[in-house]
Image (tube, rainbow, N blue to C red; front, side):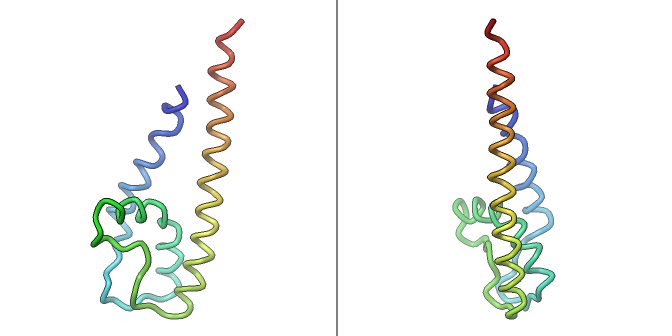
Length: 100
């Protein structure tokens, strides 16, 4: 039952990353793109593990991009951890309620 709570969120995030956040290695990116790329860091990292041509961070970018990317990446990772923790806690309470 735990997998029922956790399985759809990463799939939605990866689909959104494929549709909206493809990183081009030759394009120059600014701080706005750094925020978007940082928010989708984990889905793009998973995509990169399966396909080495997919980038999870731009190679041609400004200093503002680096700062925004790090801020968004750290926030995104903390958000994923908090969400997974609370989803697991809800699932364990739900599964534990079957016992009487």
